[in-house]
Image 1 (cartoon, rainbow, N blue to C red):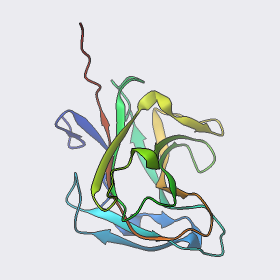
Image 2 (image 1 turned 90 degrees about the horizontal axis):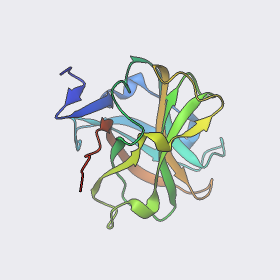
Image 3 (image 1 turned 135 degrees about the horizontal axis):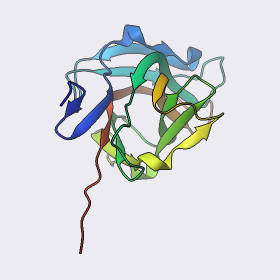
Length: 178
């Protein structure tokens, strides 16, 4: 089992060094490391502001080099997001994008209706690997060069401080027979 494979799950990418990430413009502020995490020793923290970029989302992105990330995983297996938000009132969904670049990617979404209430608790939500939306051509899932994640809000003017992302990982579905 590789360092990225932990207890039957595969960590998609460590989220413990904010200097490796770039904010999506001035609607994403205060990008920093956070000492607490649900699945790793640290996490990333940022805020959504009503900036001049006029975006409904706040998030970060980076260039990565991941090959065979999805090897031995099926469309029925799950991608899990572990995160913390102080309120879900104006959140539409969280997203994770993996692909070739900012135009060609696969996107997984976690809607606010599935988030724990009260919101000020850690969440670990999952979606099926096969439930990805496609941006552009989607890209080459066997050779991922781009990763982005963040929060989509109901309106461009919505703001929220203290969004914390601890990690994303792949988890095998438990198959049962009756």
